[in-house]
Image (cartoon, rainbow over the protein chains, first blue to last red):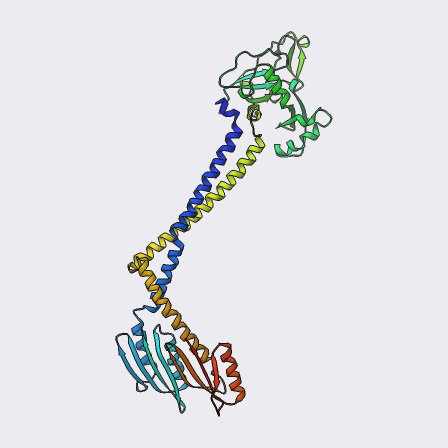
Length: 132
Length: 309
Protein backbone atom coordinates (compact mmCIF):
# COMPACT_ATOMS: atom_id res chain seq x y z
CA UNK A 1 0.00 0.00 0.00
CA UNK A 2 2.79 2.36 0.91
CA UNK A 3 4.57 1.50 -2.35
CA UNK A 4 1.42 2.37 -4.25
CA UNK A 5 1.17 5.65 -2.43
CA UNK A 6 4.75 6.38 -3.29
CA UNK A 7 3.85 6.36 -6.96
CA UNK A 8 0.47 8.04 -6.54
CA UNK A 9 1.17 10.68 -9.18
CA UNK A 10 2.35 8.14 -11.71
CA UNK A 11 -0.71 6.03 -10.98
CA UNK A 12 -3.05 8.98 -11.48
CA UNK A 13 -1.40 9.88 -14.79
CA UNK A 14 -1.28 6.23 -15.87
CA UNK A 15 -4.91 5.59 -14.99
CA UNK A 16 -6.20 8.71 -16.75
CA UNK A 17 -4.01 7.95 -19.78
CA UNK A 18 -5.50 4.45 -19.88
CA UNK A 19 -8.95 6.02 -19.71
CA UNK A 20 -8.00 8.27 -22.61
CA UNK A 21 -6.82 5.27 -24.64
CA UNK A 22 -10.02 3.35 -23.90
CA UNK A 23 -12.08 6.39 -24.94
CA UNK A 24 -10.05 6.76 -28.12
CA UNK A 25 -10.43 3.08 -29.02
CA UNK A 26 -14.16 3.27 -28.23
CA UNK A 27 -14.53 6.31 -30.47
CA UNK A 28 -12.54 4.70 -33.30
CA UNK A 29 -14.75 1.64 -32.95
CA UNK A 30 -17.88 3.76 -33.19
CA UNK A 31 -16.56 5.68 -36.20
CA UNK A 32 -15.38 2.57 -38.08
CA UNK A 33 -18.61 0.78 -37.17
CA UNK A 34 -20.48 3.57 -38.86
CA UNK A 35 -18.22 3.47 -41.94
CA UNK A 36 -18.31 -0.32 -42.27
CA UNK A 37 -22.07 -0.56 -42.06
CA UNK A 38 -22.47 2.43 -44.40
CA UNK A 39 -25.72 2.82 -42.55
CA UNK A 40 -26.05 6.42 -43.68
CA UNK A 41 -25.46 5.63 -47.35
CA UNK A 42 -27.79 2.63 -47.31
CA UNK A 43 -30.49 4.70 -45.63
CA UNK A 44 -30.13 7.48 -48.21
CA UNK A 45 -30.37 4.95 -51.04
CA UNK A 46 -33.41 3.37 -49.50
CA UNK A 47 -35.12 6.74 -49.01
CA UNK A 48 -34.36 7.65 -52.61
CA UNK A 49 -35.84 4.41 -53.96
CA UNK A 50 -38.93 4.85 -51.77
CA UNK A 51 -39.31 8.44 -52.95
CA UNK A 52 -39.02 7.34 -56.59
CA UNK A 53 -41.54 4.56 -56.02
CA UNK A 54 -43.97 6.98 -54.38
CA UNK A 55 -43.82 9.28 -57.39
CA UNK A 56 -43.39 7.01 -60.40
CA UNK A 57 -44.91 3.83 -59.00
CA UNK A 58 -47.93 5.44 -57.39
CA UNK A 59 -50.90 3.11 -57.59
CA UNK A 60 -53.27 6.08 -57.60
CA UNK A 61 -51.83 7.40 -60.85
CA UNK A 62 -54.60 5.71 -62.87
CA UNK A 63 -57.23 7.61 -60.89
CA UNK A 64 -55.30 10.82 -61.24
CA UNK A 65 -55.03 10.33 -65.01
CA UNK A 66 -58.81 9.79 -65.20
CA UNK A 67 -59.34 13.24 -63.71
CA UNK A 68 -57.72 14.71 -66.80
CA UNK A 69 -60.86 13.72 -68.74
CA UNK A 70 -63.05 15.75 -66.44
CA UNK A 71 -61.34 19.12 -66.51
CA UNK A 72 -62.85 20.07 -69.84
CA UNK A 73 -66.22 19.46 -71.36
CA UNK A 74 -66.65 15.75 -72.40
CA UNK A 75 -67.57 16.80 -75.89
CA UNK A 76 -64.05 18.14 -76.38
CA UNK A 77 -62.32 14.95 -75.27
CA UNK A 78 -61.55 11.70 -77.08
CA UNK A 79 -60.32 9.21 -74.53
CA UNK A 80 -58.64 5.88 -75.14
CA UNK A 81 -57.12 4.23 -72.07
CA UNK A 82 -55.81 0.67 -72.14
CA UNK A 83 -54.18 -0.79 -69.06
CA UNK A 84 -51.60 1.80 -68.14
CA UNK A 85 -51.49 3.61 -71.44
CA UNK A 86 -53.49 6.60 -72.55
CA UNK A 87 -54.12 8.26 -75.85
CA UNK A 88 -56.28 11.35 -75.49
CA UNK A 89 -57.14 14.21 -77.77
CA UNK A 90 -58.64 17.50 -76.72
CA UNK A 91 -60.13 19.79 -79.32
CA UNK A 92 -61.59 23.22 -79.53
CA UNK A 93 -59.86 24.35 -76.31
CA UNK A 94 -59.81 27.94 -75.24
CA UNK A 95 -56.62 29.49 -73.86
CA UNK A 96 -57.72 28.83 -70.27
CA UNK A 97 -58.70 25.25 -71.05
CA UNK A 98 -55.39 24.61 -72.77
CA UNK A 99 -53.59 26.03 -69.77
CA UNK A 100 -55.59 23.81 -67.42
CA UNK A 101 -54.90 20.67 -69.47
CA UNK A 102 -51.16 21.36 -69.79
CA UNK A 103 -50.79 22.12 -66.05
CA UNK A 104 -52.65 18.93 -65.21
CA UNK A 105 -50.49 16.87 -67.58
CA UNK A 106 -47.32 18.35 -66.12
CA UNK A 107 -48.41 17.40 -62.62
CA UNK A 108 -49.18 13.81 -63.55
CA UNK A 109 -46.46 11.28 -62.75
CA UNK A 110 -46.61 9.67 -66.15
CA UNK A 111 -44.13 9.18 -68.98
CA UNK A 112 -45.12 11.60 -71.72
CA UNK A 113 -44.73 9.80 -75.03
CA UNK A 114 -46.23 12.54 -77.10
CA UNK A 115 -47.70 15.93 -76.39
CA UNK A 116 -48.79 17.88 -79.39
CA UNK A 117 -50.48 21.26 -79.30
CA UNK A 118 -51.81 22.97 -82.41
CA UNK A 119 -53.55 26.27 -82.75
CA UNK A 120 -56.44 26.09 -85.14
CA UNK A 121 -58.04 29.47 -85.59
CA UNK A 122 -58.62 30.82 -82.09
CA UNK A 123 -58.77 27.46 -80.37
CA UNK A 124 -56.28 24.76 -79.58
CA UNK A 125 -56.09 21.07 -80.23
CA UNK A 126 -54.05 18.76 -77.97
CA UNK A 127 -52.89 15.21 -78.67
CA UNK A 128 -51.55 13.41 -75.62
CA UNK A 129 -49.99 9.96 -75.31
CA UNK A 130 -48.58 8.63 -72.09
CA UNK A 131 -47.90 5.53 -70.01
CA UNK A 132 -47.29 4.87 -66.31
CA UNK B 1 -12.99 8.66 8.27
CA UNK B 2 -11.19 8.68 11.61
CA UNK B 3 -7.43 8.94 11.37
CA UNK B 4 -6.06 5.93 13.23
CA UNK B 5 -2.41 6.29 12.30
CA UNK B 6 0.15 6.99 14.99
CA UNK B 7 1.04 10.68 15.37
CA UNK B 8 4.78 11.18 15.81
CA UNK B 9 6.20 14.45 17.13
CA UNK B 10 9.27 15.56 15.17
CA UNK B 11 11.84 17.77 16.87
CA UNK B 12 15.54 18.49 16.35
CA UNK B 13 16.92 16.54 19.31
CA UNK B 14 14.87 13.42 18.74
CA UNK B 15 16.60 10.06 18.61
CA UNK B 16 16.70 7.96 15.44
CA UNK B 17 13.76 5.69 14.86
CA UNK B 18 14.59 2.01 14.66
CA UNK B 19 11.24 0.63 13.59
CA UNK B 20 8.24 2.24 11.90
CA UNK B 21 4.60 1.17 12.03
CA UNK B 22 3.79 -0.93 8.94
CA UNK B 23 0.70 1.07 8.07
CA UNK B 24 2.60 4.37 7.95
CA UNK B 25 2.72 7.29 10.32
CA UNK B 26 1.50 10.84 10.63
CA UNK B 27 4.02 13.38 11.83
CA UNK B 28 3.63 16.64 13.71
CA UNK B 29 6.34 19.22 13.29
CA UNK B 30 7.53 21.53 16.04
CA UNK B 31 8.21 25.21 15.28
CA UNK B 32 11.85 24.20 14.69
CA UNK B 33 10.75 23.26 11.16
CA UNK B 34 8.44 26.09 10.23
CA UNK B 35 7.73 29.78 10.53
CA UNK B 36 4.28 31.15 11.20
CA UNK B 37 2.44 34.39 10.71
CA UNK B 38 -1.13 35.32 11.64
CA UNK B 39 -2.81 37.95 9.54
CA UNK B 40 -6.30 39.35 9.26
CA UNK B 41 -6.89 39.49 5.57
CA UNK B 42 -10.00 40.37 3.55
CA UNK B 43 -9.92 37.16 1.59
CA UNK B 44 -12.54 34.45 1.61
CA UNK B 45 -10.80 31.37 0.32
CA UNK B 46 -7.61 29.55 1.28
CA UNK B 47 -6.29 29.54 -2.29
CA UNK B 48 -6.52 33.34 -2.32
CA UNK B 49 -4.66 33.55 0.97
CA UNK B 50 -2.06 31.07 -0.25
CA UNK B 51 -1.37 33.24 -3.25
CA UNK B 52 -0.26 36.14 -1.11
CA UNK B 53 1.62 33.97 1.43
CA UNK B 54 5.10 34.46 -0.14
CA UNK B 55 4.82 38.23 0.16
CA UNK B 56 3.92 37.96 3.88
CA UNK B 57 7.15 36.11 4.63
CA UNK B 58 9.24 38.45 2.51
CA UNK B 59 12.43 39.20 4.45
CA UNK B 60 11.68 36.59 7.11
CA UNK B 61 12.95 33.55 5.26
CA UNK B 62 16.22 32.62 3.59
CA UNK B 63 16.11 30.78 0.26
CA UNK B 64 12.46 31.72 -0.21
CA UNK B 65 12.18 29.57 -3.31
CA UNK B 66 12.59 26.39 -1.21
CA UNK B 67 9.57 27.18 0.94
CA UNK B 68 6.05 26.06 0.61
CA UNK B 69 3.07 27.51 2.39
CA UNK B 70 0.25 26.04 4.39
CA UNK B 71 -2.74 28.24 5.14
CA UNK B 72 -5.57 27.66 7.63
CA UNK B 73 -8.50 29.91 8.42
CA UNK B 74 -8.82 30.64 12.11
CA UNK B 75 -11.63 32.51 13.83
CA UNK B 76 -10.63 36.07 12.94
CA UNK B 77 -7.45 35.59 11.03
CA UNK B 78 -5.50 33.40 8.68
CA UNK B 79 -2.65 31.23 9.95
CA UNK B 80 0.22 31.11 7.47
CA UNK B 81 2.90 28.45 7.88
CA UNK B 82 6.05 28.46 5.76
CA UNK B 83 8.06 25.24 5.63
CA UNK B 84 11.03 23.89 3.72
CA UNK B 85 10.06 20.48 2.37
CA UNK B 86 13.59 19.43 1.49
CA UNK B 87 14.90 20.36 4.92
CA UNK B 88 12.12 18.34 6.59
CA UNK B 89 12.67 15.34 4.31
CA UNK B 90 16.41 15.37 4.90
CA UNK B 91 15.87 15.52 8.64
CA UNK B 92 13.36 12.66 8.61
CA UNK B 93 15.68 10.46 6.56
CA UNK B 94 18.52 11.23 8.94
CA UNK B 95 16.32 9.99 11.76
CA UNK B 96 15.50 6.77 9.94
CA UNK B 97 11.99 7.76 8.90
CA UNK B 98 11.20 6.71 5.34
CA UNK B 99 9.43 9.50 3.47
CA UNK B 100 7.18 6.93 1.81
CA UNK B 101 6.01 5.85 5.25
CA UNK B 102 4.79 9.34 6.11
CA UNK B 103 1.09 9.73 5.42
CA UNK B 104 0.39 13.26 6.56
CA UNK B 105 2.43 16.09 7.95
CA UNK B 106 0.90 18.45 10.53
CA UNK B 107 2.13 21.50 12.35
CA UNK B 108 1.85 21.78 16.11
CA UNK B 109 0.54 25.32 15.68
CA UNK B 110 -2.63 23.88 14.16
CA UNK B 111 -3.66 22.41 17.49
CA UNK B 112 -2.23 25.06 19.80
CA UNK B 113 -5.34 24.88 21.99
CA UNK B 114 -4.67 21.24 22.85
CA UNK B 115 -1.29 22.10 24.36
CA UNK B 116 -2.77 22.74 27.78
CA UNK B 117 0.49 21.67 29.40
CA UNK B 118 4.10 21.38 28.20
CA UNK B 119 5.10 18.50 25.93
CA UNK B 120 8.67 17.44 26.61
CA UNK B 121 11.07 17.30 23.63
CA UNK B 122 13.83 15.00 24.87
CA UNK B 123 15.68 16.04 27.99
CA UNK B 124 16.34 19.73 27.46
CA UNK B 125 13.44 21.33 25.67
CA UNK B 126 9.68 21.42 25.78
CA UNK B 127 6.82 22.52 23.57
CA UNK B 128 4.45 24.98 25.21
CA UNK B 129 1.56 27.17 24.27
CA UNK B 130 2.86 30.65 24.92
CA UNK B 131 0.11 33.23 24.51
CA UNK B 132 -1.60 31.10 21.87
CA UNK B 133 1.54 30.29 19.92
CA UNK B 134 3.40 27.00 20.18
CA UNK B 135 6.95 27.69 21.20
CA UNK B 136 10.03 25.61 22.06
CA UNK B 137 11.36 26.52 25.50
CA UNK B 138 14.16 25.10 27.63
CA UNK B 139 12.71 22.75 30.21
CA UNK B 140 14.44 24.79 32.86
CA UNK B 141 12.05 27.63 32.15
CA UNK B 142 8.97 25.52 32.80
CA UNK B 143 6.80 25.88 35.85
CA UNK B 144 7.78 22.92 38.04
CA UNK B 145 4.12 22.57 39.14
CA UNK B 146 2.92 21.90 35.60
CA UNK B 147 2.74 18.23 34.77
CA UNK B 148 3.92 17.52 31.17
CA UNK B 149 1.61 15.77 28.76
CA UNK B 150 2.28 13.58 25.75
CA UNK B 151 0.75 13.98 22.33
CA UNK B 152 -1.36 11.21 20.92
CA UNK B 153 -3.58 10.57 17.88
CA UNK B 154 -6.19 12.96 19.34
CA UNK B 155 -3.84 15.82 18.51
CA UNK B 156 -4.21 15.05 14.80
CA UNK B 157 -5.65 18.12 13.04
CA UNK B 158 -8.22 17.78 10.27
CA UNK B 159 -6.04 19.30 7.61
CA UNK B 160 -2.44 18.48 6.81
CA UNK B 161 -0.01 18.18 3.97
CA UNK B 162 1.41 15.16 2.17
CA UNK B 163 4.86 14.80 0.71
CA UNK B 164 4.61 14.63 -3.05
CA UNK B 165 4.87 11.01 -4.11
CA UNK B 166 6.83 10.05 -1.07
CA UNK B 167 9.74 12.09 -2.37
CA UNK B 168 10.67 9.58 -5.07
CA UNK B 169 7.96 10.35 -7.59
CA UNK B 170 9.01 11.03 -11.17
CA UNK B 171 6.07 13.39 -11.72
CA UNK B 172 5.22 16.34 -9.49
CA UNK B 173 1.71 16.61 -8.06
CA UNK B 174 0.84 19.69 -10.10
CA UNK B 175 2.11 18.13 -13.31
CA UNK B 176 0.27 14.91 -12.49
CA UNK B 177 -3.03 16.69 -11.94
CA UNK B 178 -2.57 18.85 -15.02
CA UNK B 179 -1.83 15.81 -17.19
CA UNK B 180 -4.66 13.85 -15.59
CA UNK B 181 -7.09 16.73 -16.24
CA UNK B 182 -6.04 16.94 -19.89
CA UNK B 183 -6.37 13.17 -20.33
CA UNK B 184 -9.77 13.10 -18.61
CA UNK B 185 -10.96 16.04 -20.71
CA UNK B 186 -9.97 14.32 -23.96
CA UNK B 187 -11.39 11.01 -22.73
CA UNK B 188 -14.74 12.72 -22.06
CA UNK B 189 -14.65 14.37 -25.51
CA UNK B 190 -13.92 11.01 -27.17
CA UNK B 191 -16.66 9.25 -25.19
CA UNK B 192 -19.19 11.95 -26.13
CA UNK B 193 -18.17 11.77 -29.81
CA UNK B 194 -18.29 7.98 -29.73
CA UNK B 195 -21.76 7.98 -28.22
CA UNK B 196 -22.87 10.54 -30.81
CA UNK B 197 -21.57 8.34 -33.64
CA UNK B 198 -23.03 5.28 -31.97
CA UNK B 199 -26.35 7.06 -31.48
CA UNK B 200 -26.45 8.20 -35.10
CA UNK B 201 -25.57 4.71 -36.22
CA UNK B 202 -28.26 3.15 -34.09
CA UNK B 203 -30.86 5.68 -35.23
CA UNK B 204 -29.95 5.10 -38.88
CA UNK B 205 -30.04 1.33 -38.49
CA UNK B 206 -33.42 1.54 -36.72
CA UNK B 207 -34.81 3.87 -39.41
CA UNK B 208 -33.52 1.54 -42.14
CA UNK B 209 -35.10 -1.44 -40.42
CA UNK B 210 -38.43 0.36 -40.07
CA UNK B 211 -38.40 1.33 -43.75
CA UNK B 212 -37.50 -2.19 -44.84
CA UNK B 213 -40.37 -3.56 -42.78
CA UNK B 214 -42.75 -1.23 -44.62
CA UNK B 215 -41.16 -2.00 -48.00
CA UNK B 216 -40.14 -5.67 -47.86
CA UNK B 217 -39.58 -5.76 -51.63
CA UNK B 218 -36.60 -3.45 -51.11
CA UNK B 219 -34.76 -5.86 -48.80
CA UNK B 220 -32.37 -6.87 -51.57
CA UNK B 221 -29.76 -4.34 -52.56
CA UNK B 222 -29.94 -5.62 -56.17
CA UNK B 223 -33.68 -4.98 -56.23
CA UNK B 224 -33.10 -1.53 -54.78
CA UNK B 225 -30.47 -0.72 -57.38
CA UNK B 226 -32.60 -2.02 -60.23
CA UNK B 227 -35.68 -0.03 -59.11
CA UNK B 228 -33.58 3.02 -58.43
CA UNK B 229 -31.91 2.89 -61.87
CA UNK B 230 -35.23 2.41 -63.63
CA UNK B 231 -36.98 5.25 -61.86
CA UNK B 232 -33.97 7.57 -61.96
CA UNK B 233 -33.91 7.38 -65.76
CA UNK B 234 -37.64 8.07 -65.96
CA UNK B 235 -37.38 10.84 -63.37
CA UNK B 236 -34.58 12.64 -65.20
CA UNK B 237 -36.24 12.41 -68.60
CA UNK B 238 -39.70 13.41 -67.43
CA UNK B 239 -38.37 16.30 -65.37
CA UNK B 240 -36.56 17.55 -68.45
CA UNK B 241 -39.75 17.38 -70.54
CA UNK B 242 -41.66 19.32 -67.91
CA UNK B 243 -38.86 21.87 -67.55
CA UNK B 244 -38.94 22.45 -71.31
CA UNK B 245 -42.74 22.90 -71.36
CA UNK B 246 -42.47 25.29 -68.41
CA UNK B 247 -39.72 27.30 -70.13
CA UNK B 248 -41.73 27.46 -73.36
CA UNK B 249 -44.82 28.61 -71.47
CA UNK B 250 -42.79 31.58 -70.19
CA UNK B 251 -42.23 32.60 -73.80
CA UNK B 252 -45.91 33.30 -74.28
CA UNK B 253 -46.34 36.99 -73.66
CA UNK B 254 -48.00 39.98 -75.28
CA UNK B 255 -47.34 39.78 -79.01
CA UNK B 256 -46.11 36.18 -78.88
CA UNK B 257 -48.55 33.30 -79.37
CA UNK B 258 -47.91 29.59 -79.36
CA UNK B 259 -49.07 28.14 -82.63
CA UNK B 260 -47.72 24.60 -82.25
CA UNK B 261 -45.87 22.41 -79.82
CA UNK B 262 -44.60 18.87 -80.05
CA UNK B 263 -42.87 17.00 -77.24
CA UNK B 264 -41.97 13.34 -77.57
CA UNK B 265 -39.36 11.04 -76.06
CA UNK B 266 -36.43 12.48 -77.96
CA UNK B 267 -37.12 16.04 -78.95
CA UNK B 268 -39.32 19.08 -78.71
CA UNK B 269 -40.45 21.64 -81.25
CA UNK B 270 -42.47 24.78 -80.79
CA UNK B 271 -43.54 27.56 -83.08
CA UNK B 272 -44.54 31.01 -81.95
CA UNK B 273 -46.30 33.67 -83.96
CA UNK B 274 -44.79 37.07 -83.20
CA UNK B 275 -46.50 40.40 -83.71
CA UNK B 276 -43.36 42.07 -85.04
CA UNK B 277 -39.61 41.77 -85.36
CA UNK B 278 -38.92 43.12 -81.87
CA UNK B 279 -41.12 40.47 -80.29
CA UNK B 280 -39.44 37.81 -82.43
CA UNK B 281 -36.01 39.07 -81.32
CA UNK B 282 -37.01 39.08 -77.68
CA UNK B 283 -38.37 35.56 -78.04
CA UNK B 284 -35.15 34.34 -79.64
CA UNK B 285 -33.12 35.86 -76.80
CA UNK B 286 -35.29 34.12 -74.22
CA UNK B 287 -34.87 30.82 -76.08
CA UNK B 288 -31.11 31.27 -76.26
CA UNK B 289 -31.01 31.80 -72.52
CA UNK B 290 -32.57 28.38 -72.18
CA UNK B 291 -30.02 27.03 -74.66
CA UNK B 292 -32.72 26.12 -77.19
CA UNK B 293 -32.15 26.22 -80.94
CA UNK B 294 -34.09 28.95 -82.69
CA UNK B 295 -34.85 29.81 -86.26
CA UNK B 296 -37.07 32.30 -87.98
CA UNK B 297 -39.76 31.05 -90.30
CA UNK B 298 -39.12 32.62 -93.73
CA UNK B 299 -41.37 35.49 -94.81
CA UNK B 300 -42.91 35.94 -91.37
CA UNK B 301 -42.13 37.00 -87.82
CA UNK B 302 -42.72 33.48 -86.56
CA UNK B 303 -40.00 31.82 -84.52
CA UNK B 304 -39.36 28.12 -84.35
CA UNK B 305 -37.73 26.70 -81.23
CA UNK B 306 -36.44 23.18 -80.93
CA UNK B 307 -34.11 20.94 -79.04
CA UNK B 308 -33.35 17.42 -77.96
CA UNK B 309 -34.28 15.71 -74.71
